[in-house]
Length: 472
Image (cartoon, rainbow, N blue to C red; front, side):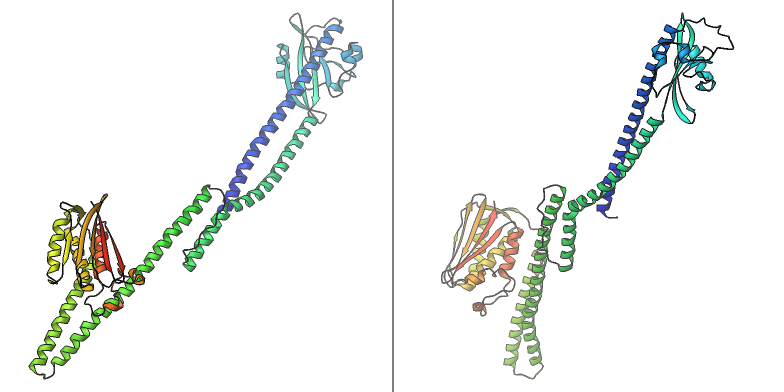
């Protein structure tokens, strides 16, 4: 069962329950009010007849145990106006204290109204009595009251009125309420079905969008919702936000997979060259060559083996950095560390000048080994890609420390700057420079693992500058 149908049925059920309670209350109130109105009219009529009986009847009263009381018509029983003209809808009778009929409109024996034994006892005890009985096939409401003289019941006045009209009115009211309720429920069900469809339409669009995204893997799609920011609006906004995050995650995964494929291809290429050289040299060693050529082949194999070792070491370092290896973040004196690193770098090319300008007691939060690795990579690149002096400076800027490594080489074209941190990327003019294109990617990974940032700026003909930023 769909949520739309459940919502409509629930709404219809609540409305049906409300209409039932309302109809029952209205029917009950109407029945009670009409009955009270009838009782009030009968009570007034009975009082009027009782007073007329006291005013007009002067005949001597028979003893209470008399077995016979003469039955008279109203015009002989009393000349009072109340007995001569009374409402057509009312039936009036006069009884003696023993419940025998004394007077009726026409003085007929069959005019007596029902009176139960309990009712007679109640009247004889000077209390009123109500009862409902069938008279001549018609339901009647009968009111009986005693006429008391000197604390003695002398007559009993009965006044009755048919309940047929009231019952017919109540039946008509019940039928009207039932038919109107059913029609209202049908109309309400239709309106509820339409409005629930309108209210749930954004959710339907969300479902369709989700299905389309699942089938097409198009995370650029969004739910177009222009309604109020209610629960459905919040759901649409949340769904769109989730799609944005999924899109970013999917793009990152795609980029990572692409980088992984490129990485595997580049590693295969870099490994294939020295392995091919080693395999060829081993094939030459099987031949009977002069000692001088064998020595050259061995030296070549040693160089290629060293190259393989360096490549494997770089790959292991990069893999550890990618694995999120936790690095220590401890206070590190940059002046002492950079002096040591520059001294080691000068041994790579004793003829080059490395200028160091670092204030004393300038600390950062970082890992000493990782920081040293990054600095050596930057200085090694500067030595490889330039022939002039190299400047290393450091200074504090706010809550950060900025370290700059500047060379004065040929520089890097603008269209290639965005790829300098890609793995195995090397410019066209660096083919003769030893290396695998892993230095800057390793440096970037290590710097970011320490919570820092690395930026490379370059200008053709003027050189390049790498800027590191660490927290104090």
